Image (tube, rainbow, N blue to C red; front, side, top):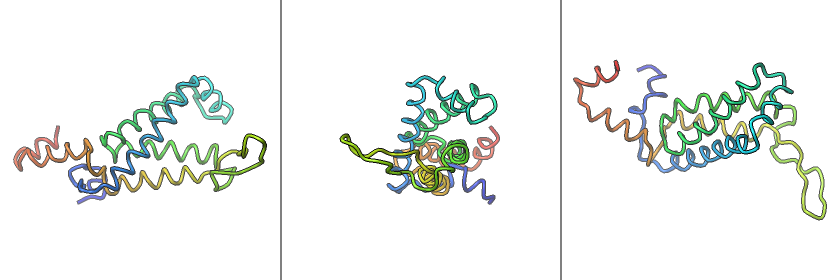
Length: 171
């Protein structure tokens, strides 16, 4: 059995655990909320940020990032294609980490002052990026867990019988 088969084939995962379910819903909500925030503020602001960072084709890359976060978040929440969807989400986190957050150090929370309204925070470091990457890596390794569409896909694959499995794999 190839490692890619183990990591990216929903039929090779176990779906009886609550831990991946909880992890994927929380991580999925995080991505969905971040993607929706970019949309609600207008993609032009995110495009300008990417252009300022020297990212090539900032308009296209902004839409790719937004769609990856929104659609990837929805896929994680529903548990659909979790191992596959996690790869572009990891790439998004690595890109954010090395283009924006890395220069601010590890910590995601930096108190830089205090006023009558409470603490003031500086730019976040790459801690959150690493946490997202670690969570996505775990989901790739263990699967989507309970209440996932992947578990339904895996059940259907197991139910089609040994003769049809080869035909199904070829489709």
